[in-house]
Image (tube, rainbow, N blue to C red; front, side, top):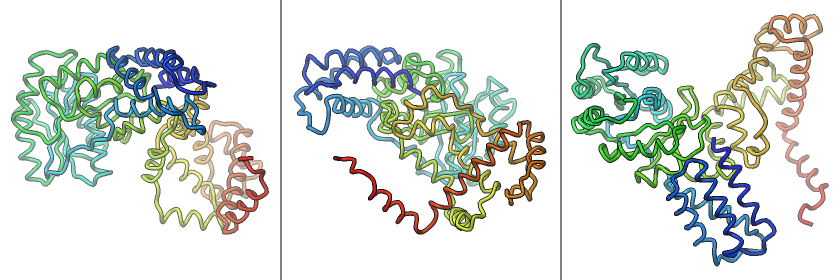
Length: 447
């Protein structure tokens, strides 16, 4: 996400390297490169021009501290302006009323139906709500079936009226149905078209006027760039929606929609889709996105994802096992599966400051742990619990059963043993004392 834009902005800041202070002359080339990078990312030209003019005004005349270079100061100014361009602060979804009605709109193919399922999952698992999905796409039977499949997958009921061709009536009756059964959230998935037309706009406007939702969201495919912004404006002019959802932000997107849409429709981006799985939905934080664009990482989001998978009681049990040297392949597999739940490994690495650039040309497959899991699953219960018994004949059998070779099995077992040793050392009470001793013996880095 935003890799091309990040690279071009990084190149733009290098122009100021070695300069003693910021002046109108030496920032002209930098801002020219910044503006070009934004336009290449499919940001509207007027927005890109206004953006660089704001950066210029803030940059000129600022005193550069002795500990901060002009390039670093420019990065900070651009970071702050990017944050403001994308909305400044995160805006939460409005689900305070019980039940809260959420109307989902957008063009066909934008990812509305999938997002509806993701939102239901998010509100159920992370907010403790009791959601119900409503199928109001009366034109595409496949959309209704897709919503039913998603609902079953995530454990959320789906309200449908098979054969009924009155979307407004379906939406209205679904609310009465949900109130009777105690559902706290009603998510209404509406019909889309391949292009904006009057019939589509009339229908969704009628639905909104009839049900008076607490939240109307416009879903847009981030990969469509500037077209997404234009579509958002047309929908907002008619619907006056409350927020935007950017889907497919994990794909080959240039970022133009994320950077432009707030300026054009003056409505916040509330969610971003970051993958195909039902839990691949993130709240949109403008500052965190600016951090990622400028290669600063996103440690806060990384920690939040880790905390979602973290079980304090299980962690204590695991620590006790490590200290007793009882950490086995079942524990190793469990940690691996928790890591996978956090998301794509390359994306996670990109959240660590400085890692995005290092990982740029590293190709990490989505199923990078597949062979490791295959090896572990090919072990017997006794072998997983007691790795010490893994002799030559057992390793040969495991290699054949996992579709790998003896070298790969040996390598995994060796890495496992090394990991176990390191974990034992780090978990010991004396570890912090030893670390302090090591640090005292190191040369002073500030000399």
